[in-house]
Image (cartoon, rainbow, N blue to C red; front, side):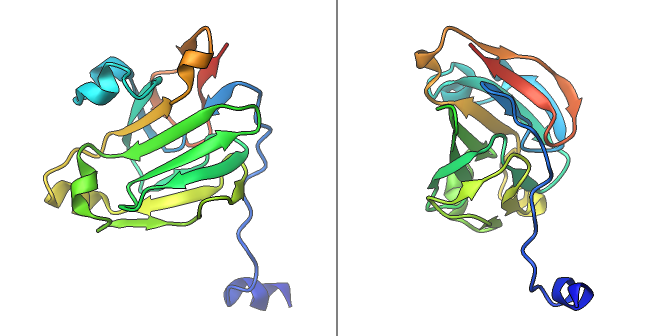
Length: 170
């Protein structure tokens, strides 16, 4: 019976079993982590929306970087906000200027108020559609309430798998 349930979509996909540490943000994408200052958009690189990092994606699915609650899904589907169980407010913004795409190429997999686990799929996006629209697909991962903390530290740069530890907050 389980085979048919999985085959025909009766079973809900479970998030990977990841034990999320307090005040830790895990990579929402497989790709290359870059420092915030290297994002080619001043709103992000100057930390106006909060501290964090950028990721040049090697995939097309955003996963939750924490255990928490979906606080926002942008009307244009290119960004999602997650509030962790310990109060981190995280914005994942796929691409630069992708708001101009008006949702084309983006598919939210969650809605505001959903409880999520670290590693659970949140959003899929079409990298070719982003490129065709003339936008970079670098993704900002920001702690929007970083002013509430002493420091946001980038703990890994370079190539990462989804759910690898990338930021710590103290």
